Length: 158
Ligand code: NI
Image: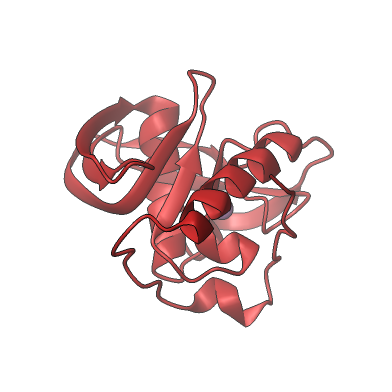
């Protein structure tokens, strides 16, 4: 395992659309391991392929309940609304107010290419939406209401 460099806003890789993963190769397995390590080291709750410069449809999330690996994720259903603070490891030192669904149901594959469904509310719903946006080249700053704020901590960044 190795830490990967987190790309920051302004890097064009963050605005590109990612390709699906067809099979779990040793390289993909290593990518997933490295993404988890990189996310934990940065105190993030999520990380998407483009953030480490890889344009593949993979995200990792941990909202404090253990690691979640989502390969080729698709949102099946959303409901409700939550408005709250959001940050991103690719937009260091900033936070913004973003409205997201309060419930998300998604389908994805795990690191063994087994398909599963996941339901999330509150922070997990927010993290799933935020990370999946990365796979289509979108950052939360596009959705932020009002100007971003400076933050001096990193523990709530995604
Ligand atoms: Ni992000």
